[in-house]
Length: 292
Image 1 (cartoon, rainbow, N blue to C red):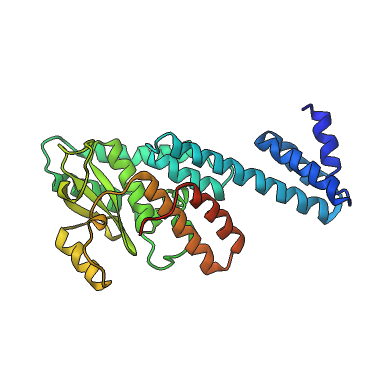
Image 2: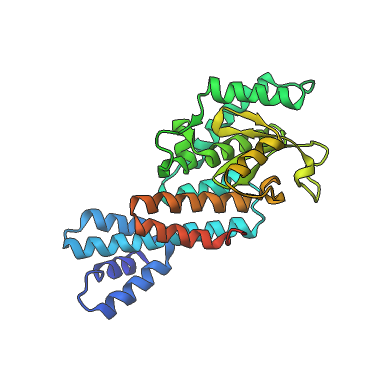
């Protein structure tokens, strides 16, 4: 469609005939992000009243959520191999102009500092201690205990910029850097919490990555405290839950991003933001329902 045709459609946005508007809206929305710049320019330059602006804002939002849905679906269908990419797609929902490369560059800087201190002669415990020192003491990552349920704790770009997050988001950052360093750390879905499992390096990549392959656990929300199986059991007992295998095994990247989206749903529910809750539930449906 030519620029003149697009402009002609945009001029009809505030048409009082609802049928005409719905046809115009359907056509523009179907064009996706290729028409975003034209709509934004029209929103800023046209003085056609609140109806015009409100309708453009609605179309921009519809296009944006559609783009995020498409990208998230593609990530899942292509195997969800890159956890950071999945987390950044979620951030893209809130930050349409997010510079993902800037986030990756910041994480690469942290990774480089850790890499300089690691060597092949260190034990698994020693590697984690080195990692923790650089990650928490040098770069200042920490759990946001004061404002635990704030949405920003779940958006990875906010976590990387502010160096604070919730158990899940800190674990995503921790795992992302660890994977780049070749350290076998994977997230574990606990009820009301999230930790990382350090796997037996000989088992990584195998078909079974269950509880038997875990050497120990790392709590990224508590400065990287190292936990054993018994401490996980004690945590579950306090919640009145049995020590089921699913609470000890590594979670898939899809499961982690699903929980990230569910955390955001809960955050916005606490704020009474029903529009964002509905949006995020749409995104969550793409990665499936959490298993009981």
